Length: 416
View 1: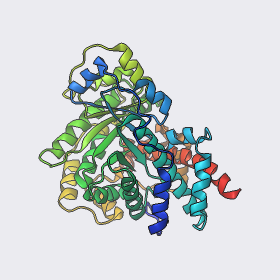
View 2: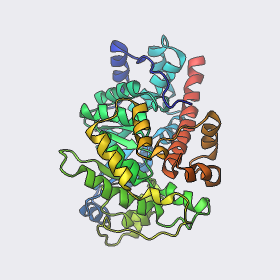
View 3: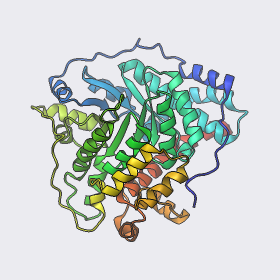
């Protein structure tokens, strides 16, 4: 099965796009509803280590209870937005948007309405808290370079002072990120799970931010009986931080490392000094309640207990082959997603961008956020799929399920 479906025309050209962008601002009196940002000594201490603190929530009320002077951004995704849309908060906006896009093909209507919902909710977050907001592309675009770039540019045009565009880790996403960064558009390159993934992304595309979803890494190890799951995600995050800093050294604009998918307040202190923390409300509240002094932990390398020969070491190791691939891709960027996949395979890293059959893709999605290791152990051992690439595919599959739930609500209005 190909990774790369044929590119489709951009759905909303010219005057229609302008009308949609104006509608995204409907009802947003920017800054009029700004919440207080009190000083919190604990978060000031985290900032002193060099860490930027972001909240990982789309819930305006939850964010309002936690926001303080040391927080600088919020990040949303299709899961978090779906929770807000399913409350019925934006049904009226869906109807208004549908009136503008009803002449488009049905699925293009859905993508445009979902885009507008993301933009409008992002504007509400930016207005209330004054920080930057990561806004996510529709999952339909994950393997389409041209449309990812087009929608990324449109997001940025709506609110260049506050919007960061989230692009998923796929071969097409890497090429789209490279183009968006050439335009000066900040990109949160998401769904990363290893130091090597983030090194390659930094080499090719120089995104503003890369991620390690560390909580899911710990869950993968524990849930699959490969170890106790303790500190695996932390080890990978710290290894990725060092790799990304090294690759960014000397650049005018550095790529920053995000510690994402935090599950507890303890992880906030354990990863102090990492460029960015993006924390769900529960983890942020736990960290603040625990308080205490913190120090820069980016030189740490936690020991972990994992089963041998399971491919887990590839999560934190940077091999000579990986460095050679990064050097090659930086000096001669890939022309197409297929070129990127082929060159990774030629360097002995075919497991970075595995191809999945239709049945395998369905299995990845059915596993949920945490793949079942036994299902994939043969491919991992053969070097045709990595633990990191499986987790990335599972994360994209999970977001697609939530995107579909959001899209289905939109479709009910289109059909009415």
